[in-house]
Image (cartoon, rainbow, N blue to C red; front, side, top):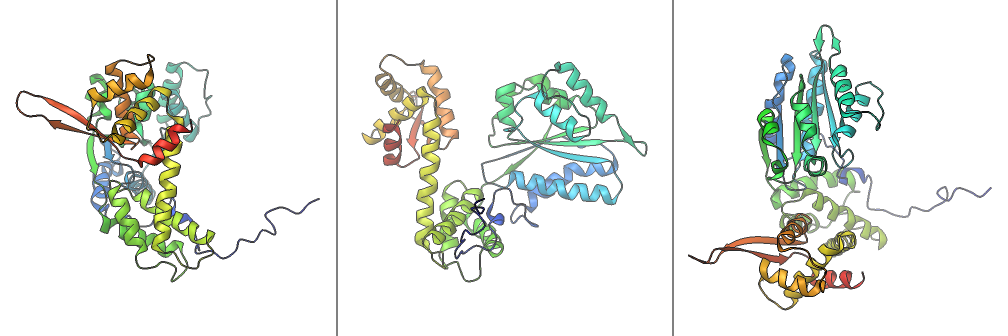
Length: 384
């Protein structure tokens, strides 16, 4: 039998002592610059410690602004307080990219609360009734208070509608904390559900460069060997991430990838040049992956944006549609549908839109700009 390939593999020298603190999933003991938001969550949840169902809460903020980390931090603290006070509380975290329908979420909650249910095959009524039966359990004469964190809730709402929120907001002893990257996600919620949601809203602003530097300094002490980072590395990562709408995840990715590049170069130090190389690598991977997986019509819209950008033309939605029809050669969608594609490309960070006024009597128009490297977009589209 051959030796295991990993047994004798030489890991070589590395700048890392522990990569995990640079992961998006890592939950530190403290969350710098998010005290106010965590305190607001706690203020809304504290009723649970008096055996009263808390208000529903909605958290908004761009990607990488600490929404998930703050919710999980508050979850951990509340469960510790409940245990100390012998209160029957449970907080369950659901990522709506993993469970994308009402049935899947309710089945998963039943499983976690101790009831074995199938993940398909039951009627909607059966899974709802079973979920509510589970919630009727009592400990020391007290019913369970269940707080459900629905992360990226907009994905579930867009795919499956607002049935889950309708069920949860009309179930006793249940409180919902919804997390969304988009301020307008409630467009997927019908008035009958909004009337029972009555949520408290918390907005997470983007991190500034100095705040990102604090986060990176704290994580780098846990992640790297001593004297590895050159002085310009963290300021550079922070400045770049601040330009990406204050995205802490992007800052962590830059620092981690710069460390990988140092290892690849057999370097005992991480230098500014490695951060630049990390940015290029991350940008390349992100853009190419997104473009390769876009539907054909969205690829055509992006190609039209690229053509107009290369021609140094101001890109209005009308001009974009005319160019798109030329690119599509007769296989085009309606002008109204183009706006959906523009919104989706903007959400992916590939383009940006800005509404400008043309002056009195001339109305307003959307101006579209490419947000990625022209050459990279051109190369990727041409490789399709």
